[in-house]
Length: 473
Image (cartoon, rainbow, N blue to C red; front, side, top):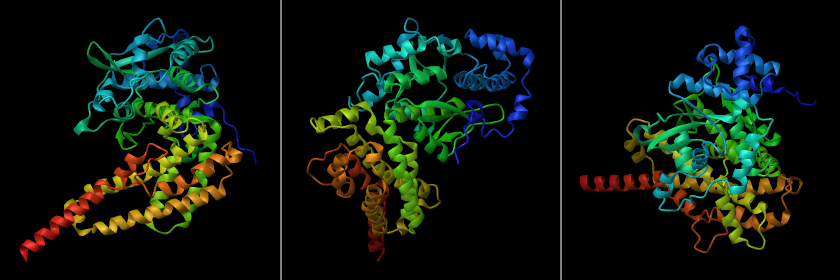
């Protein structure tokens, strides 16, 4: 049976249980004024002062086809801004006006470069040609006038107890600050882009054949939805509406305002767009193999490892496809480089990410329990180390299943690259402390992974416990 095709409105509202009830709340007497304000890009029109009414008008006219999914997304972003801010600047996205502000966000934050002693490049995420493409796309006649603006608001987010919010984490940990924070007269301001700006950016960055189509969804999408995104060249973007809140936290980082969740999804749309479409499908074929393997294993640590690995494959947060890593791999393979090698580097990175985060999560869970030091003192370090070894033993099994079950040639990945990389995919992760040069730039991370804080702390506590027991005796 062919899957049922949903209209943009039906897809966006598929989890909105009271959709018909909300549609009935639209005060159509204000409809012409609402549409005129959007068509003319007049975000300061008094119609938008009626925060309890205009979301329903947007929903109604999105269903009727009189506004686009992009306009609906931007309207709901504006509504979420108005919930938290009274001082809002509406500025045009133009190469002639506010160009410097936007260009500022195309660069990694200066604080990040300073914190890494120059280790983080300050190159723009867009080349000059890509930047010209972005502004050209924003001038396209098919872009509604309402999408040619962005919103500037005070940055109210300060790290509580030194912890970043999700938008701060994205900027200061990954170096992606696109349409996020800007400095104006020494003060940090927050930029909230239109849907049209976000879509134009990913098209300019990766080209129209790679760029995912950002699809708004009221509420949260499921893992299965995100999996389907990789197969259809789309990426869901969470948006709120009156009565449907977005979560206060994603990816273990706070989301003080609703628009933070939407920005997180924009970040993932950028990363997904960097991955060639045929390789996105290959990752999903691998995820299916991993999910089946997870259903077969019995050990808890194995199930948790495979569950996290599966989720990371779906999430597709793959630094390997970013420009700096691709350039590094090209340097390692100056004559034999192909995008297939980036694919395998990403696979290796996914396994290391899974390993690292699994044990970080375990440490955090223990820390939340009473008598944390007492709990750790009762656990033998060797037990944890043996669990790590069991986890490592999964790697060759995962590799064997993937390489025997997935037809990589059907996904446009050459067998030559598989044969070249296979020994590293199966063995190099386990032999992470090997002294000879690696083909890939992940050696230091693995050294960090295999000496997790948990293991180090267990050893330290065990040693101090033994010293105290000897002193008592």
